[in-house]
Length: 225
Length: 395
Figure 1 (cartoon, each protein chain N blue to C red):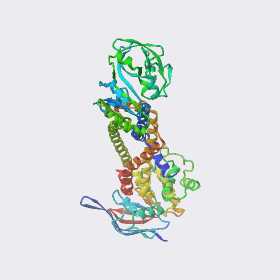
Figure 2 (figure 1 turned 135 degrees about the vertical axis):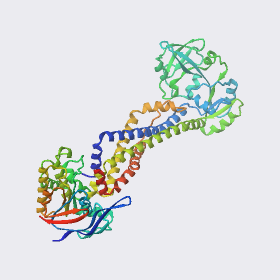
Figure 3 (figure 1 turned 120 degrees about the vertical axis):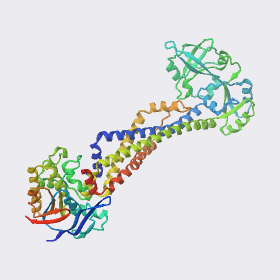
Figure 4 (figure 1 turned 45 degrees about the horizontal axis):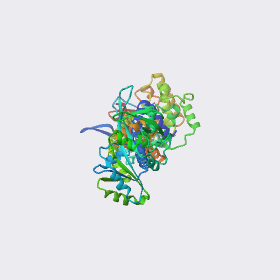
């Protein structure tokens, strides 16, 4: 299988005054097409930092990162926007839905920026795919947490990304709803989607093909589940 | 969905704040719009008023400043007089079609019920001459004759305000002589609506000003001779000559300084309003930092986000602009009476004149205001790093 993400010696340093804090330290990491990967670790271990660097939301401080065979270091912001838009779908812990837009419009939002045709049937099919066929015209305020996260997943899917990156997608949900969201991820994976999910929840993490353990910014273990 | 509908939906999220910001812009634009419409209306009305005098040149007593001369056409009373010999001297100048003497005087009319006295302006005139100067005059009742005594005409506004009617008798002057209103002028739309008109000799007798006149109004046969005639008139020792062009210029100058004061106030109001808008937008950008971060994460570029913020701003300022113009149209009479009080001289007709160019200008102004106010918040929001934006929202 082809590698969609390939990181070598990847580092991310944050500076606080004179102090340098390594959020990620010399990480070697790769993801093949169709893989479902989970990343676990204690708070402050660098899980979110790693996900953000992999998603081109945060530039790496050192090492190399290839996304879909494109080396991202040295790319201009404009090219990073395009790369992100065309290849990556994000799912956040806080959902980050636009409160004034309906579920349908929230799912449609990325099309506005990618200037793709947002035909109704495609948006409807995504809505059905995430199990919200009858909730399209509801505002986020009228949806439950689990439903909001499904809208967010629908939004991540609309641009046909190569990979979905999810940061604690069940962090704000009860265990039953978390279970449903992970089932949805597993379904998407079975349909061929590549996924990286950062989570605290070990039970959930074990549903992935591979589980990476992170500690102090380094990968300290990898378990095939 | 497009960026425009997205911007519009964003604005509906905080209706109270959006409404107040729009109101701020509306107030600023309505004041600007009124002032500009007033500016063009003022000049137009002033022209009308000066032309409605039917006079080319005014002769006033020497030492009387232009300002006082300007007041004469508006019924001002000045405590200096010309004599009958001055009138003869003026009349002897060739090229003059008509030179008619006038005496202005004031009397206080006491209201029977409230006991308050209001000043009334009296014009002592020669009726035949006046009808040649103002052939458009029409009257309810009749005009008085040259040799009549104890008769008067009243201006239309004055008659309505004081409930005067033809045949009514008024006590006038220090001895409270009884005068019968023989006619009420039809509305002229200018200053004549505000005055009483009496035969000249009667005013001179009643107020003890025999042989005295306030001004000589001159109509020249050929307008191209105005300056030649006024040069001739200046040779008469007691007389100061004021042409209508000079009066216009003086009034425009006087009004100019009052208008620049008004304009300064309005510019300050606009600047305050602009900072208010910028502040509101910055607050809204700040509150939505995390949202912008999310938008960048899902594929929005910096220019998408700044375009959205700019659209929101322009939407606010255009709405404010349209509401402001409507408010200015609705409240024009209020604003007019306020401004009339501020200006040293104001014509009696409506000062406000709206034109399509002015509407277009005010709309363009609203758009520019929006762009100017939105540019900094838009720039800030476009520069946000998606990661930092998302993180900042979590703190």
